[in-house]
Amino acid sequence: MAIVRPTLEQLQHIASRLHMQLRPEQASEYLALMQGSFDAYDLIDELPDFIPPTRYERSAGYRPSAAHNRLNAWYYRTEVSGARDGKLAGKTVALKDNISLAGVPMMNGAKPLEGFVPSFDATVVTRLLEAGATILGKATCEHYCLSGGSHTSDPAPVHNPYRQGYASGGSSSGSAALVAAGEVDMAVGGDQGGSIRIPSAFCGTYGMKPTHGLVPYTGIMAIEATLDHAGPITATVRDNALMLEVMAGADGLDPRQAAPQVDTYSDYLDRGVQGLRIGVLREGFELANQDPRVAASVRTAIARFEQLGAQVEDVSVAEHRIAGSLWHPIGCEGLTMQMMQGNGAGFNWQGLYDLALLDKQAGWREQADELSASLKLCMFVGQYGVERYNGRYYAKAQNLRRMARAGYDAALARYDLLVMPTVPIIAQPHPEPGCSITDYVARALEMIGNASAQDITGHPAMSIPCGLVDGMPVGLMLVGKHYAEGTIYQAAAAFEAAVDWKTA
Image 1 (cartoon, rainbow, N blue to C red):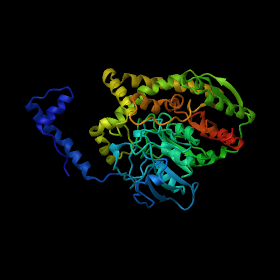
Image 2 (cartoon, rainbow, N blue to C red):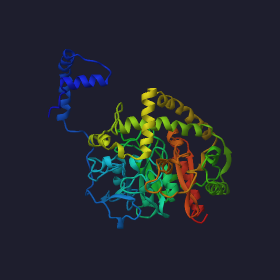
Image 3 (tube, one colour):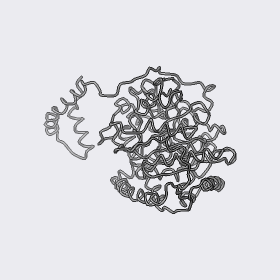
Image 4 (tube, rainbow, N blue to C red):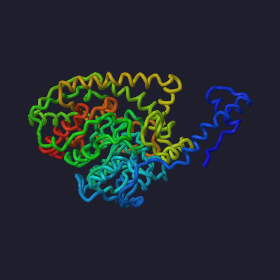
């Protein structure tokens, strides 16, 4: 049907918002000239959308009751059975709830999206099903994925499987909790500031943030395209490697992907670490809130790598701290313009758009006061940067990003891997209801100091469980060269085979 044409008064208002003034006779003349463009809009409106077909039967599912969701880690339950055989045959999967599963509600932890139902599957969903996996539902995630804690999701805070009332980490909070609790074999997470690796560290799972663009982000709600990553969270290294094998590779629909180099990651699992060169990143142990018990646990694990035959020595990469600072203008201005002002899509890229999601996300403006404090904080910073400084700090940070990447690359030319604590602390208690904004935000962002850097540089990074402090898991992070996920799996598998981290 024909799109609604603007009135003369509406066009004058549009012009004023563009800092122009139109006299009525000018507006009338422009309206006449605009009709040719609007006729093209009408033609586009009449055509069916061009989206991937949905395969594999499924039902809409249901919201589990509290009695059947003790960790609040499930948003929606369903069951979608994939192919009869494949690399993941017999494996069960949970999807972070920013990932589209056609016909099943997706909320992304945020009330403005409640009631949205995707019409097509994300690429990773299709690939998992084609590999024989069974998808059991959608895992709770944090409010628009803007928290490293697990208290910001609108359905309810997600509890750590090791201790009720404590953070499971975020923003893939439900994904890691479900794997750690044994409710699924594996889960898909997303990572823009550490959101795969932080919950993996807090819950004792294996979480891989692949090289930027290795796994297609198609059908996953964006935060900021240059930071968006998706990857596997699993209970074992082998499952993680197999899952990445299935999900990796170009899909032709995601502009984040620039000729990604895929590999058979499971081939690396039995190679051991004899002769591997591992650099212990000094700056990774120097965060202001570094818990010395966590640092000691990680250093004990590093010593184990050396006992297994790796060559280990300290290294300094000053750009690690710079990368963490670059996250702020890129993350805050980028998410404000793409996820919020751009309604989850944005412009100037040839990706696969979800039109219904775009329309639904536009409704955040009517519920803006209900957005989480962590998201509001980022939006305030981002909007100020765009309005006051014309986006120049976003632009400069993107330029400096290449310098940060080069600093990491220089270290990784000398070492096969870099190692550091994934997060500087163990899981903390959820903030009390009605707490101050300061306390709420602190619990959301206090743990990102090491993990955000690799979202800036794009290097693959994996959190592996290496011990317990006060009965809570500790994560060690391995960082590799771009597209060298295999080397990370090589080291992770050797450590897994040699150490029972729960008694280390």
